[in-house]
Length: 149
Image (cartoon, rainbow, N blue to C red):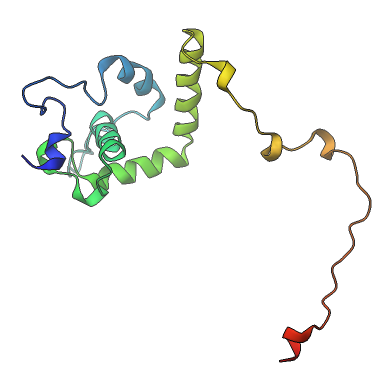
């Protein structure tokens, strides 16, 4: 059996594997996504459903496969299509919203061990800019031996 297809749910020697995107998680994610658009009046190719794209995204993350190498046999659409959808969702801020929503749900249900959490303030600006430390001296370039040769 192809190694990639072995990662598919249900392809583990007859054992049913846990699906990549179960219905419970989909109920959390779906309201955050933009609605699937129907095919326009002029026709055209139907859009790949959001759930299928999210399945491909999760499959790529789990398997490490390249976007263009996602097997068509999955029935979820093209890997490149899923990558484009991922890019659009990221630009809309979907991943930050989804991250907050999932963390909130985990916290409410007591599934986060805060005793192991770390807070790093180096990336958070100080209120009102923080205290002034005085004037910073400019570094003046001076010629050294390496500059002469």
